[in-house]
Image (cartoon, rainbow, N blue to C red; front, side, top):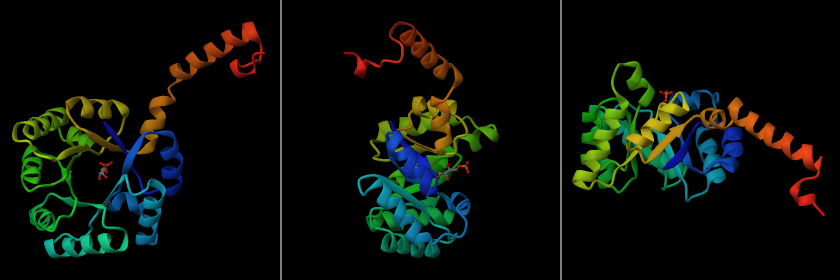
Length: 226
Ligand code: E4P
């Protein structure tokens, strides 16, 4: 399992990257919007400098036509770095762009996936990652567990190299389900990870351990025992 941070906030990336076992960072234009009108390329380079070259940095194109997507991809690879995973929405224009980018050896993340057929086509086109939109599917009455399980089944059956990158999560339970359905990777807002470890019952357990220890040893920690 790999966890990615679905944010472009530099403070959050610095803070949570030190805490959690993070495999990379993803964003999309709506996530970038939350940071205001940033200097886009220098901001993305800063994210890269925080996470390092050995982690995955996924950046989405903004053009809607194939040629524009290819130009966006060139600009990203040129002005950020050539290891970026270029995110392409799986539309008709996007599908063509995925094929052309894969022919050039670019690492591609096929995104905005709401259906099995989008994912199947993207893996057959050679996408390195496919990003099913878990919460958005659930909102539409589509079963995201079944969609992800079908992707995992096809990857196994046909030996595709594609990885399933679950996206669009609103809580930790959805992330659990995506991994259990077969997603190798999931990207989420850091608040989902911090909430998962900050539950009251976890803190209560730690409070109880603390009180029991102190009732015997006072404020002396293990390291301070003489
Ligand atoms: C990945 O970066 C996806 O674009 C993202 O997870 C979508 O999340 P949303 O459904 O909350 O917009």
